Image 1: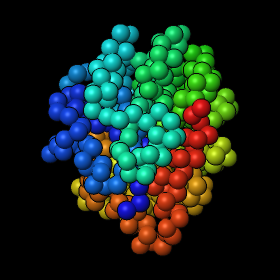
Image 2: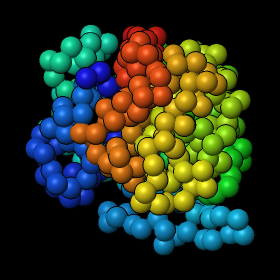
Image 3: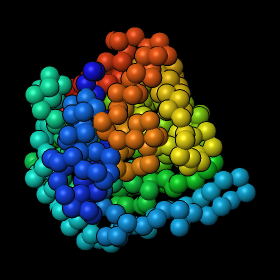
Image 4: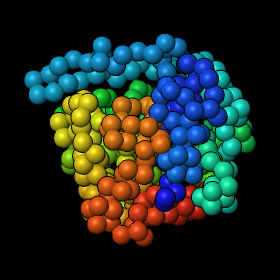
Length: 340
Ligand SMILES: [Zn+2]
């Protein structure tokens, strides 16, 4: 089994909503520590994501049909006090259930099989004060990765909507606070995640950041033309920076027409991975499942089944060295270049 570093999951949000512990194998959801062990996931990025409401909403209820697809309007900004308050509750679950990965040596211990590790990630920077006054305390609490936005505006920038067809080339770039946050994360060695960012925001980070460019969970716009997927020009920028893209397993966002079908085959995910690899080189592709934050393709329906991706690529002729780079080697390189 090739050990995998997984670029994104929302398991903390699931446990925050439903209770239980990530230490026990659950019948609910898609990812917990026992299922990570079964699937050979040595470590994963665990997102702190602050939803607009405490109860789960059905995104399809917000969906509008359009002439050739669909559109879900952008979420409103979070109320001012909600980000930090809810984030602290999710961070408490992280501290209770998980073994933090703080350094590259921690990650190497996980890859050697000593333990299953967790990288603390913010999905959307709303818990960070606009004057960055609490950023250092978040880093001291273990924060090693920060996504500037989710699909809504915040003090730092703006995310992209769910839409088909559509591109991320709409909406504003980073604010002054967003630009300051990029520089501060570079200085503190906190990885920046470009997922869900507008093209203008992506370009701002590409211009300002001195770290490799990373999208922890995304796909290829050339195959599924939705705003959450990266254009070939954006992939060029990731490659030129030495960064990577973690391919997500969502059945809709990898489907050629972005339709939600129960029987979306594994091949559509393998096609995305191969497009990323052909366009950027294997050194710039990794996995970013989005377990517990998406509806994955059934063949990789939970964390215990992640090796199915590597087996599928092996069947397409990928050599072992490339599978190891995709599984964990590329993450090791990027995090070595980013954390300090
Ligand atoms: Zn996401």
